[in-house]
Length: 148
Length: 384
Image (cartoon, rainbow over all chains, first blue to last red; front, side, top):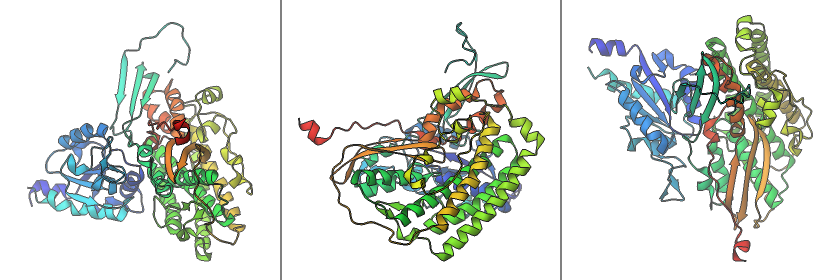
């Protein structure tokens, strides 16, 4: 483990992007990261809102067409190595919004997240459970720590 | 938006601060343009639409039971009230009598949700204020309500309590659940009141929030604000007073006079004990009997409309039924009618407080993006 990985392991920064979900997953994740009950900071994972500071990107929501460009921009401005977690049914497979009545794709949705940026870990659930978010964030760590 | 001082001369403001749609200060994607002069906000413009997913379009043509469960996905904070209202629309159109026990359980869920929504608002408001300690404490109090909701409904966010004709069997309240709810409510009330005491007696916080983001009574009425945002300006208007589900219960409509951030925060604090009072009355008189009324038939109806009081204000759902399928669904969420109030509250504040002035109106932009309107013409009229 190099010096960079050694120090990164002690301060992993997570950034959260809302791409048009229903707010349920977003609040559960903010809760998981912030609230004293599920306190993610005990695993040395911190919340940030600055992409240039972040190591892990958590994406929620089915990615509406308006949100496609901002999401790409945010992904590109995160320095390498980086990991992406798609959290919630919408981010993983489009949720209830992706398809209208079976096979007709919705005009509003560009997602799921996989279509736009590469995804490393997927967290299922509608809405995601805080415990699953913790597990997803921890499972994305090896990629960051083995980079250099 | 017009200027507050109504100058007849047209003012040109050159400095514009634009945030969004994705910005670190704003949790949800929306765009704010602040027109600034000497660090004071002269005009503000909020644009929504980034989140538009077109739930009404997906609902069009679905069987009514399926579409009702879709309305839950409109908002992750007040999911239960969306489902409740959508089910009420169907029940109004099909003239279904709901068993009393089911009505009481729905109401208990709605009030629990109001407590959780208000606590989330207070926690988020304190975070924007910069007071992390209060924010953390409130998030911790909120976990108690979330525990109660997931115990009754089985999920922390979307509990799917109401079905047409009653409630889901999973949401029935037995002795053990009732005991846990009562214990939880007592602890919430105690801790919220402790928080309120410390919050009000803190001179630093009070000086930070008093007189910031003022919305006058006239402006609030003119801009069609609704819910606690309207009541914070002194207008005593609560839809719960007019809903027949709330008739058996005694509760006060809380109002505040100033319409600033302080009034908005306090009104939500004071509404929590009122909600607890309603839940306790409902649990005390919880009638015995069946959970669902299955004795109804599907008929074709014209457009049916219904309003309920959501945690954020007036919520409107309407649709027509044709062969048991939904036609021409229209949904208007309370944050939609509060956008004008948010823009107006920004004007005159310092630039650092503009975000606070927006947050004081309790925005939920993910449920606001409902720009779609499906024109509905009944088949019988179309043939003529």
